[in-house]
Amino acid sequence: MNITLRSLAMFLMMGTAAIAQQIDTPRPSPVGTVTQKTGLAEFTVTYSRPSAKGRKVFGDIVPFNELWRFGANMATILKSNEEFSIQGNKIPAGEYSFFAIPGETEWTLILNKTAKMSGTSNYKQEEDALRFKVKPETTPYKTETFTIGFANIRDNAAAIEVSWENTKVSFDVNVEFDAKVMKQIDDVMAGPSAGAYNTAASYYFNNNKDMKKALEYVNKALEKGGDKYWILTLKAQIQASLMDYKGAVETANKAIVLAKADEDNSYVNSNTTRIAEWTPKIPAAKGKK
Image (cartoon, rainbow, N blue to C red; front, side, top):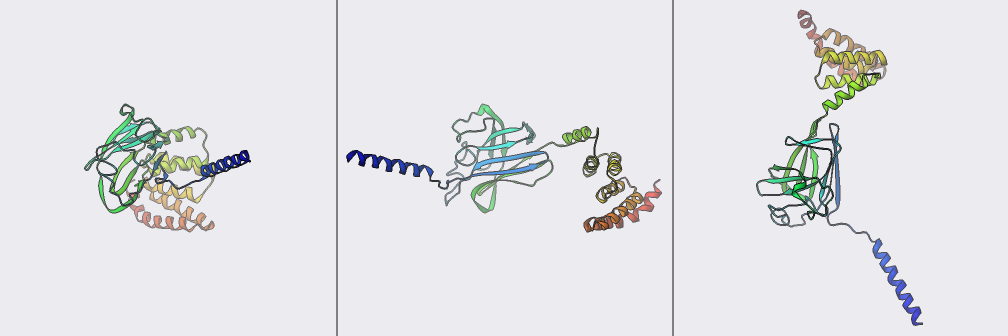
């Protein structure tokens, strides 16, 4: 009988332990991930997000002039699939732990080559990939939960913004993409499709490169793919940039006819607007010849 009771008690204890192991409760500082594409690079920040909960943050729970893991729990990680630069310093693609030393008037931000760390316990300054300075801003609003995000997205840069309580710091991550895009264009041009020619022409036009080359590419796109109103629209803009306003108007009119047949009013309207802008310039363009 005693053996039976002991066995039952042990069974109940084991069952209770198994149930306890299955309980999932909210974390005080949940993990957050933010990803942003800029240029050809994709940046990802993974970090834990503590909340103020009525406490004074900077100068108190986050002391000034001491190394901080830039969040809670594991060290914050910044990852990029492409080389990037911060304040003129080039950083190879990869994963980096992200630390800060907050100050009252200036912060030191740190990227360290050892990506995965439990807080600051294994941090070694000799493993730093970069240290740089930023100025904190005082915000008129309060950010309750520690937040890292991206703002002011451009083709060649994005701002990383860090906010908590009434403090914000921000800095740019810069990327180079032109050389890679130009190499892709050169590689594809060996046996390109109409779409590849159109993409190349569009890149040349949008980035104000050699417009004669852009015209060559867009003509190849039309030759290989036939008259498409979106390609004709691009050609008209390239012609206008070369001051061939008469040709631009003729090409835009062709685009309008095809766009109307496809009931694409956005192209009809945009080409109509451009024709009105270019038409008065035709006599001036003739006079320059």
